[in-house]
Amino acid sequence: MFVLIFNQLLKMLFIMLLAVICFKIGLINQEGNRNLSNLLLMVINPCVILTVYQTDYDPRLARGLLISFAAAFAAHIIAIAVARLMIPSKNNENYAIDRFAAVYSNCGFIGIPLINSVLGSEGVFYLTAYMTVFNLLAWTHGLTLLSRKFELKRLKEGLLSPMVVASLIAVVLFFVQLRIPGVILDSMEYVADMNTPVAMLVAGFSLAQTDIRKIMTNLRIYWVSIVKLLLVPLAVLVFLWVLKLDYTVAYTTLIAAACPTSATTTMLCIRFNHNYKYASEIFSFTTVLSIITIPLVTLAASFLL
Image 1 (cartoon, helix red, strand yellow):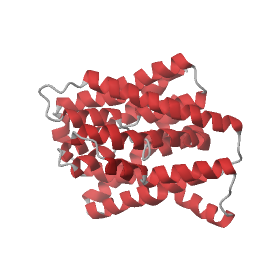
Image 2 (image 1 turned 90 degrees about the vertical axis):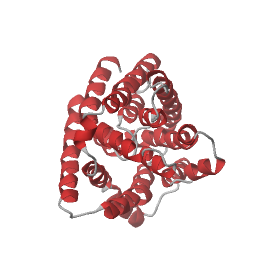
Image 3 (image 1 turned 90 degrees about the horizontal axis):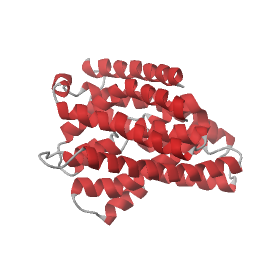
Image 4 (image 1 turned 180 degrees about the horizontal axis):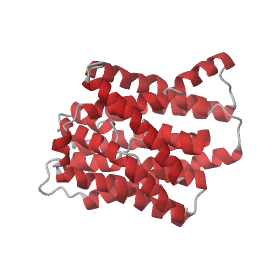
């Protein structure tokens, strides 16, 4: 597992570096990056989810999906507890950003291509549970953390996000065994295959816009990254080890929790007038650093799971 994940992350890194070069030479600008991000969020990722669920009903898969939902909730609760404990609010005006960044991972953009490469469609099948829980909590707990108040209309916005809607539709189609017509499904699979390169291009474009020297001298970003990429996934690993869950369910949950900071962090900081540049720096730094930390976490998992 360690070698598989490291090789996949290395491939993804090369795509990110290509994206950085393309942005630096002016081949694409921020508007193009925004459009590509929307394409990934609104079209490509939903196609991945819908195609993964187009499989024969299996009681084992259904049971694993329900367990994945429970494991995902538990993983997020653990992350919230670790972030609250390790990132105090005293003398830190950006503590809300730090905690959000430590809890919520890029389980869609990074998680889907990574898990698909090492665990296949079954892993992505279970990952949808983690992504659904992510959306529910990010738009409730996370939003309350950043905005200092809970707004029902924001929860509605989160519940109507493309990933949640696609996940719900896909689950219904799976349980009622309603198949998408072959020609349409084939077309959707072509679109779904673009997920990995497009996700890495988007990450690379974001990385190209950050001041690397500024990030490298900000010790708080280092600490937030340690909490997000090591302390949280290792705490989740201990939880999974104690419960002795199914191998694929456990690894899917662990890898999702070990993914770098979610791009949603920057998006919500922009919306609520927080320090979005700082949030973007955390996103970029954890994305690069995860190439080292995710293999290390899975190496530790190989001794326990």
